[in-house]
Image (cartoon, rainbow, N blue to C red; front, side):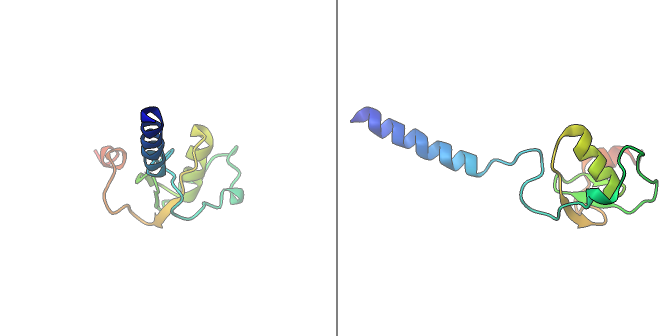
Length: 96
């Protein structure tokens, strides 16, 4: 009886913990990037059209977000077009 209670408590804790987990900074929020519009093998243009990813990192354009997803095997989505509300450490260091 005591083992059953412990098992139920651990199961409940595990379910709650997994519900709050976020993988790869992607989450389910944001808009999917249109990566099919770009030939990632040829690289991306240098046109600055900032994208804030769901990982709160600033990308120079949508193509660069797609390229990072491909290279890191992640699924970061577009949080918003334009600058991130709170600059990430990576985007701050690029200003120096």
